[in-house]
Image 1 (cartoon, rainbow, N blue to C red):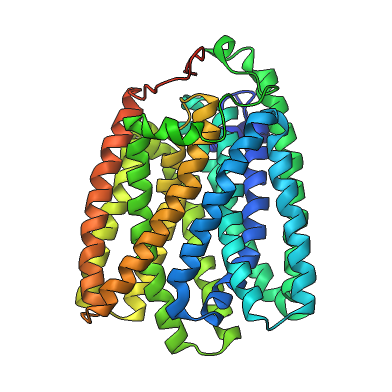
Image 2 (image 1 turned 135 degrees about the horizontal axis):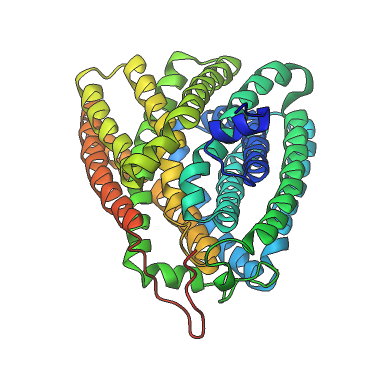
Length: 440
């Protein structure tokens, strides 16, 4: 029997009948988010260097403090606004922020405080918009669908990550940082429109989905108070395990990030050259991640389980850190950074989001957001100061690499454990009074 182009595409991405349009909408939503973010990321990196590599730990700490202030407000809004409209409020707020930065960039091109503010803000922005986007995907798709479709949906982020640096490189000379911020705001608005389609699809498809009768209505706010997500994390061994996984991920990432910033500042003193170097690294990362997401990730998840997605990259990083200890050069560091980021986008991030797919709405939106923002940036801040203290000992890259290898090994073991629990369905959570845990 001859397959239509639509059927061929559905088969290629592992989509079952009726899922193709939703999978494509998810792909497009992540394309918009990551294209906008990666247009601005090279500007952020150059502004971080402009503010002083020796001050990066202060910027990480400032980001963490902003997260501590923002997360209760985010959770409060989540408890008041129905899920079907919640992302509109979040993305609308950040659209307004982007328009404000567009105006500021045109008026204060060399302001050090603007550079610091933008660096902190975009670090907060990225985690919030991506976190709620993955909350949406975990809300729209159930666990079996997540294993089949999340890799393809995440590929939208990689395509956006390819287009973003290319657009930044091509357009920064003509429209400047101000124009790039305006374009990012338009892409974020497009993501809002795609969110409406996905929530509508969820409501239509939910009637025929196993467990649909127990699903919480997206037309009601998420249960709980502004601190219920945090309390849910502290009373669940499963969510605490995810917290530890995220902190180890942040530690490995921060160690590499600080070394990258230091070496780029030494080797490429010109700001335009720095933007080009960061843009080139971003392009290579997204190209590699896209190939893996399209052809490898979903097959690995279905055949070998979530635990393989979560453990493979940390173990590779352990080996890479040991190589860095033996040969502490920019080439080795850049290669290790590229492998880590490809692995995170193609394997770790989709696998991490699969851990939330069986959970209830309060865990998907509030507990997950607390982990993705406060816990992640807290790990950034702590590891940033730890990196500075280790540097003061005077042993150079070698000691950092050995400590990084140990962290990566523990990270891999924990990923194997959490993924195994997700594969077995052993993800029971404490629930609020009167609330049944969602098991889709």
